[in-house]
Structure formats: structure tokens, C-alpha cells
Image 1 (cartoon, helix red, strand yellow):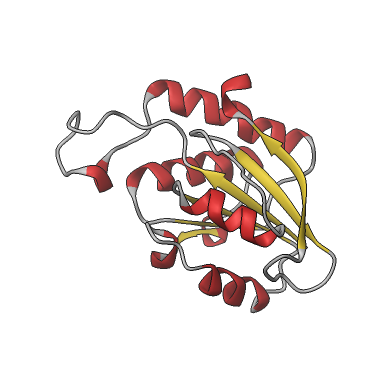
Image 2 (cartoon, helix red, strand yellow; image 1 turned 45 degrees about the horizontal axis):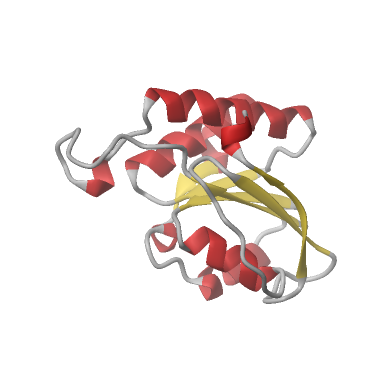
Amino acid sequence: MELLIIRHGKAEQAGVVPGGDSARPLSDHGTHQFRKVAKWIAKHDAGPELILHSPLVRTTQTAQILQDVTELNDEACYAQPWLGFGLSLDSLISFVRSTACERIAIVAHMPDVARCTSDLIGGGAITFKPGNAACIQFDSLIGIGQGSLKWHLSAPLF
């Protein structure tokens, strides 16, 4: 099974839109840049069967770009409150173990995406700039230290 861990694309600066941090949308640059990342994922047959995202606007928009590019239906892309700030690795592992999906994508926030990636592959420092994506492969059940990093895309390269 594979888990794609994605940091939302570059968002508008705080204070640009009303509604506070949770309402910040992707910037035009962030939208354009992440669409290129999503196209790379689709081109390399790495598209997920299921996309889960934080309920914040910028993660929802990032997930919708991936959904659009990989042509997933609406039922295969939805918010999970536990993917908000303070992502619970136990909740993630429990959810993934409860599905039959072979490839799941999550779209969340820093520092959670870096911490979870590091924990799942057994350590190491990993940086996620806005729009970055990583793929972790598990040969058996998903668990802490049980994964191997298959690839890591840096959105600024696109």
C-alpha cells in the first residue's frame, strides 16, 4: 500500500481575505504550481484511489486540484477533521488500516506532514515546502517505522 502525503499549495498571505487563517485560499501561483505536481502524479500512474484533506480552505482546494487531475469522483475526496493542525498519527494509521485502498493521499499542514512522514519511515528530517508531495510505500500494514520513502516532489521545481 502507498500513502501520498501532501502539503497544501502556497496560500494567500494572512490578512488578505476575511475569515482568518482557516479561510486563506491558495494563491494563483500556488494553484498553478500544485496543478503541475498533480499532473506529474497522474502521468506517473501514482494517482490515489482516495483523497483525504484537512477542512481548511487551502487544503480543500489542493485536494480538489488532485481530484480533478486524477479524475476521481466526489465520493473519493473529502475532509477529515483529524487532518487539521495537530494531525494525529494514530488516527491516520487507524483510518488507513480500515480501508481496502492501495493508494491514499492526505493533504495537510506543516509541521504535521513532515513529522508524520519522518515517523512512518523510521526517522530523518524531511522538509515540505507548500505543494510538496511524498509517497511512502508499505510492504505490510501501515505503522510507525514500517514505510519506505518512494519519492518526494518539491513543488518549487515545477
